[in-house]
Image (cartoon, rainbow, N blue to C red):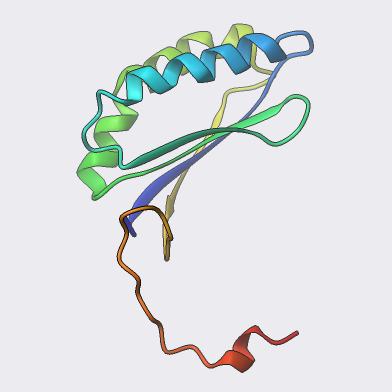
Length: 115
């Protein structure tokens, strides 16, 4: 799964927190239909701050997701639910550990982790 990803952050308008949570929970069902979305997580960072993290096998998958139903609905609802337009960042996953993933042993000396 190491490769292209997205990190989306958004801040709910006061009083819209529950609607944002429900929107994100419902969005999960749409993502299940996207073969090129390897993992997708909706998260809550704080009382009004929410996010989405998703990853893809390649750039084509990321672009397909950005043109998909979740992105379309997110932007359509943005003026009503969020303080400002959601921030969508294209990022890259450097390493991962998820069920079914291969273990990759990097040649990193133990002292690299020392405080």
